[in-house]
Length: 539
Image (tube, rainbow, N blue to C red; front, side, top):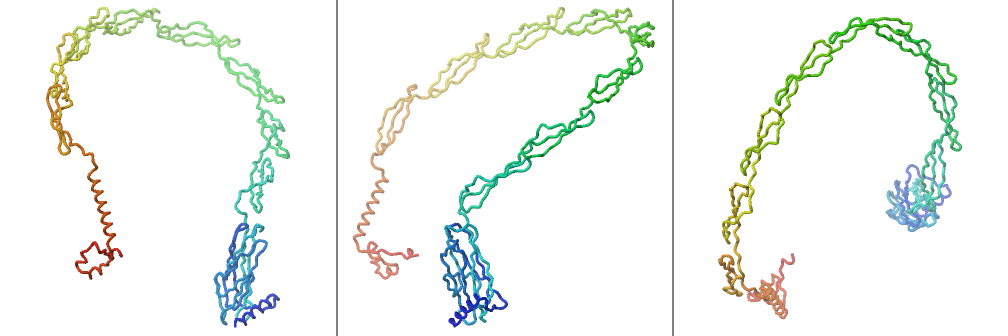
C-alpha cells in the first residue's frame, strides 16, 4: 500500500508542476513559518508548523531560502510522526484512511553568512499535499523571515549633511553611521539665526499730532523681510507766549502761545491772573489797642484804578516788660514773679517759679558700721537757709577672718580643732573648724609567723605616730609545679592509649543485639572481647 501511495504522490507532484492536477474541494491546509533575527555568523532556528490540516495521505515539502544569505546547518523533524527530512521533507500516511496533524513539523537551523546582505530574507516552504481521492490539497503558507542585523557596535558618524538655518527656520545636520550595514542616523538641530535688522529708515515722518513710521530691513544674506515701528508724534513745542490782553486789578488777561515746530501754526491761550489791588494806607479810621482791633482806609495805587476800601486792623496784643520776683522759691516751695504791659494799658500777670529742690552734701558717718551691724550716714542740704537732713545706711563690714590656730591637735583616730578669729578692730568673734584625723602611719611590719605551702603566716604592723599595732595575714606559699588539672588530663590520656593497645591485641568480633541474646551469660559479661553493633546506629 505504501508503494502505491508513493507512486500516487510522485504522480501528483509531476502533475502539479505541469499545472494540470485536480485540486480537492473544500478544506485547505495552512502552514506557518516563524521568523528570527541575528547578525552575520549567528545561527538562527526557524520552526515550520501546520496550523490546520484535513485528512491527507501524502505530502512533499520543499524548503526555500536565499543561499546568498543563509547556509543550511540542519533540518530535522519537529514532532510529526513519519516525516522524513533531508534537504526537503516527505511524509506518507501509515494507513489507507489517511491522517491529520496540527503542530510543529520542521526545525530549520541556518547560519547567517559572513557576506549576507543586511535586512530581511524570506524563508518559506513549497508544500504539495494529496488527499484520499488523490486530489491535490490547496495549501496556504505564511512565510517567515530571517532579518540580518548589524552586530552591536559604537557608531562612527560621517561629516554630516547640513541644511543651513534661515532667519525664521531651524536648520539641521544629518549624520550617517559609516559602519557597514548600519543604517542609523542622528540629527542635530541648528537654531534659526533670527533677523538682523538695520538701523531703520524713516518712511513717514511724525508731526506734532500724528505718528510716523520707521521701516527696518533684515541684513542677513538672501532675506527680504522687513518690519515697521511707530515713531511717536513729536508733540507741540510751545514758546514762552505773549500777553495779548493785559490783566487789570479785577480782570484776568490773556497769553497767546505758539508752536515753534517747523510748519506748525497751532496756538493756544492761557489766562493771566488778575493783578489784584495794590493797597496803600490812606488814614487810620480807628486805632487798635492791646485787646481790641481798629480800622483804616486804603487806596489802590495802580495807575488808572483809584479803588478805595476800609479794612480792619488786628489788636496789638500786650507788650510785656521784664519780670520781677515777688516771692523767692525755696527747696520745697515754688516762688512767684510778675510782669506789666509797657503800652500803658495797666495789664499785669503773675507766673510761678519752680521750687529749687535740695542740694545734698556728701554726708558724714554718724554711726560707724561693725562686722554684723549697719552704720548710719547723715546728709545735709547746702542751699542757703535750708536745715533739712536725711540719713543713709552704711553696710555692715562683715568679719575678716585670720588663717586660724590649731587649738586641739588631731590624733591618728580623732579629729582636731582649728580656732579662727576676726581681725577687724574691736571685734572678738571667733569660729572653729574640724582638722581631719591623721590616720595610722604603719611601718613595714615584723613577721611573727612564717607562711608555709599549707598554712598562712602573720605580720605585726606598728603605727609610727601612736604606737598602736595591727596583725596582717601572710598568704600561703604558691606551688611552682604544674597545676593539678594538667596532671589529670595527662593521666586520662595515658590511660586511653593503654586501653587502645590492649584492645588491639585481642581478637574482635562484632555481634548484633540478637546474637548477644543467644550467648551464655558469662560470655555476655566479657565486654572486653565482644563489640555490639547497636540497632540504633542503623536508624
